Picture 1 (spheres, rainbow, N blue to C red):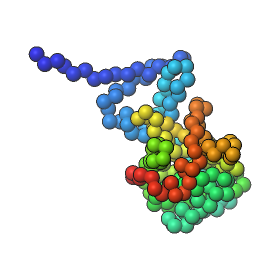
Picture 2: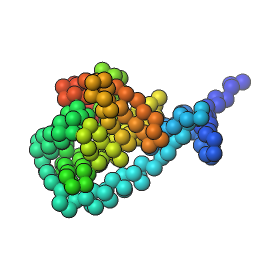
Picture 3: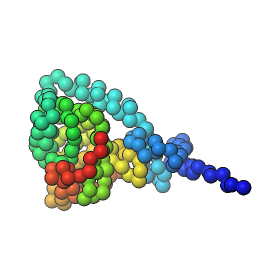
Picture 4: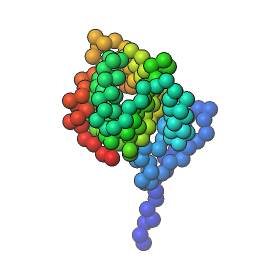
Length: 205
């Protein structure tokens, strides 16, 4: 008699939160749908509000469009996005985007947005990390920091984790920090995100 194969089912539990069931055999488990995970209190939280996040980003673009500097055309947009990163003292390879159609910067509010034709996945090989960039990436910028970020996710153990804050706390440390909405963060060498590294990584559209 053949033994019936049983699908593995993992339960993801955190104190004061409902139980979320997740099938490890489903293809969707490897796609960039969850918004973030939290490892606090010995559990994992999955928040699949990607659509809501995208709506929020689009609404913010509309709200900050007045008085913003807006650029079109792939070559000009790449140039302006790299100039902006340099102006706020962040590595210029942080946003290795393709087919960029629009870049906007409202200097009064500090709001920035970048639009591309399709989502892009990029692997920063020197640190072994994959990052997903949505068709719209938005943030509020200041010196050495991008905050309230939308449209950027990093892969952690086959799950896509929303990145909401990128900053360099101490330039002398040579480290750049990425934080998710729960406050959990990871730091990596700034050199991993310099322009040359960004160009030499692996690209997936």
